[in-house]
Amino acid sequence: MRTTSEAPVAEPQPVNRALRRREDATDAAMPRAGAAVEVDALAHSFGDLEVIARLDLRLSPGEVRGIVGPSGCGKSTLLELVSGLRQQSTGSIAVQGSEKPRDRLGSCAYMPQRDLLLPWLPAIDNAAIALRNRGASRREARRAAHPLFERFGLAGFEGTRPSELSGGMRQRIAFLRTLLAGKPVLLLDEPFASLDAITRAEMQEWLAEALATESRSVILVSHDVEEALYLSDRMTVLSPRPARAVAEVSAPAPRARPRLETVTDPAFTAARERALEALTEASR
Amino acid sequence: MRRWGPPVAIVLLLLGLWQLASSLDVLANALHIEPFLVPSPSDIAQSLWTDRSLLLDNGWVTLQEVLAGFAVSVAAGVGFAVVLHVSPTLRRAFYPLLVASQTVPIVVVAPILVVWLGFGIGPKLAIIALICFFPITVNTLDGLRSVDPDLLKMMRTLDASRWRTLSGVEAPTALPYFFSGAKIAVAVAVIGAVFGEWAGSSSGLGHLIQQASAQLETALTFAAVVVLSVLAILLFGLVAVLERRVAWWGPVPTGDR
Image 1 (tube, each protein chain N blue to C red):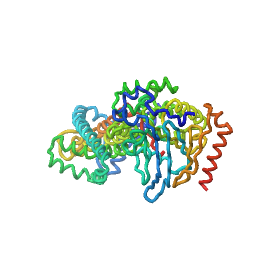
Image 2 (image 1 turned 30 degrees about the vertical axis):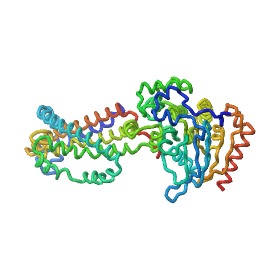
Image 3 (image 1 turned 135 degrees about the horizontal axis):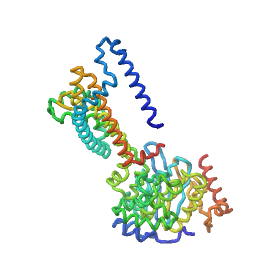
Image 4 (image 1 turned 60 degrees about the horizontal axis):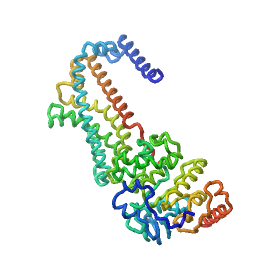
């Protein structure tokens, strides 16, 4: 199980390190003894609308944490709060040991629900956009992105325009873009919500593999229990809005890689049923 | 053929009807005016040929005014749109003024501008810019603001500065919108030039139209209008071609979809 091993959350691609901002290189990417993400007594409201009632969350470095809950329960808001894009009402959030929103922004990479690839850029420039944002030249950025295209089965698609790619391929490029940001914490917001069922299953398998080779801490938000459970080490089940954690389900270990074997495994289905039960119970 | 057939057929049909009506003096009789005041398409065609150097010279003057005025409004419109986009306070302050500027009747403003700026190209530029500025600014601003909010959030977590987001994401997203505004602007710029010339000038197609109609040279008047229309269509086509070249990705779908 890749979960709670104390693998340092470090730079997976050495080439990335060179392109990263100096202050990040020494700070955010350093392995820490503590949690990758620590959320303590978090509550959040938009005006009178209470979105998150109370949430405690602790992510060990390298852990993949699934967050499931009914639609509109504040899952996306949680990601915005963790990444420092939004200021929480009460409670504390620390990412890589720092509570400062600036540092949190520096440690998190956010992957939105839709791929949001820029149609005027070829796939490789879309994937490498974070490097360009940090001031790398187009050539440097492409050189850094190239090995990832090879590694994740996207070789040959570097120059392809997003409009010529299938939904699944676009989502892969979007994930590479998140990886190439070189951040220790990845925040994935329903990454496959827009895909059809077959592509979705393929993508889940692809992502499971990709996450296994990358030692990043991941918060994966989904409304699909099976997806979250298959991809994560542990899963937190949220109640409808205002959200609070109603259950925590560990993925049955050891897990087989192929998706079909995993999701039909009795231990897996039992865990899934437990989570679904908690979800239904909370919605009542 | 399928593309150009219908418009060509309609134009030919209308021209044929017009030719027939004027050779039978239908319109002149109905209006109780002299037949020579109602030129037939063939009269206009003849004027287009015999007065070609007059039309070309004055057309060239008008074209220069249109191009210069359009260039000024593109620069000012885009600049203004970016400023209003970057600063919400300025946007709230200036947006009503921007709309109000369009309610000022150009016909009234034109003579005043001539008084202020003289008979040279100045007032024409000002009038054209006043007309073209609006569609360019509003469209560009809409484009800049159309970027998906999730994309902006993502760019922030991917370490983009405000400038990078503007130049790398918002500006390219706004480019097709800008071109929509520019196409409207370039077509109405021609009208602006005519207003400017009417208010005071010694050359240009607007000036020619004024002169010719005062001297009851109706065929030449129509010929000048034809040249003006062709000019507007060509400029519109040019901007459309440019749009396909540099903003080929079109409007980017947003989260509202």
